[in-house]
Image (cartoon, rainbow, N blue to C red; front, side):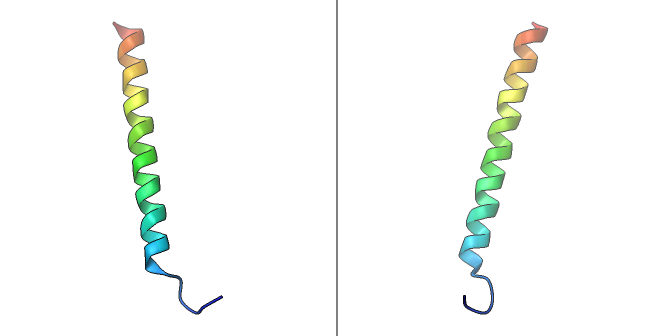
Length: 37
């Protein structure tokens, strides 16, 4: 294993986490509006 963690891996993980949380937030809002209305 090399010294220093590669930045592209960290960037990819952050991007995946951001997209996952965004998708989860959208789905949550859809469910909330569906049950409310």
